Image 1: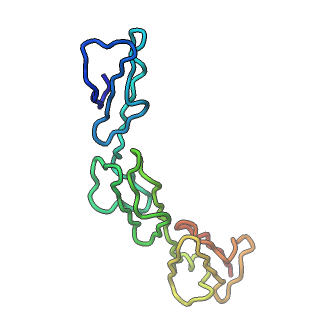
Image 2: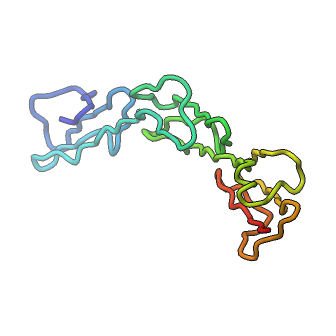
Amino acid sequence: EIPNAYITSTQQEKYRPGAKVQYECGNHLQMMGENYITCANGEWSKPPTCRDMTCGPPPEIAGGKVQGAKKARYLPGERAHYQCWQGSEMTGAATIACENGTWTELPKCKSACTASEEDMNTNNIELRWSYRKKLYSKSGDVIEFKCKKGYKKDPASSPFRVWCVEGTLEYPRCKP
């Protein structure tokens, strides 16, 4: 007997050598191996197995969520849609699909960076090309700073052209 499979050929009480018994898998299951077993020397050949082709709930992602209600099981071809939290940017496709019992590649949510007035005051810097007190930028963007009037670059400071890396900025420093 094969779990989740049923016999499709005519069943007999006794089978002769060379006889075959054919099987099919139940709904949303895929047969692995031949769809039959053969009688030889009083024994049956290796039986096939039935593999579940459904998917469990779509995985969680950092910085985002699955839209709508999640189900316990998804059929092959069914889809799930993701969205990133506000201030994050999605890379990859927002929609994933259940294929062969697994989900297609998940998207990623990259956090944006915030250059805040408080952080700039702490480091005696300001935005080089803007008079705004706060700046939001996407991951991968470059932000340029300069020393506030009356301050000069700290020799131990990081560069004044700063990359936003997934929500993190390394602020340069100026001293009196």
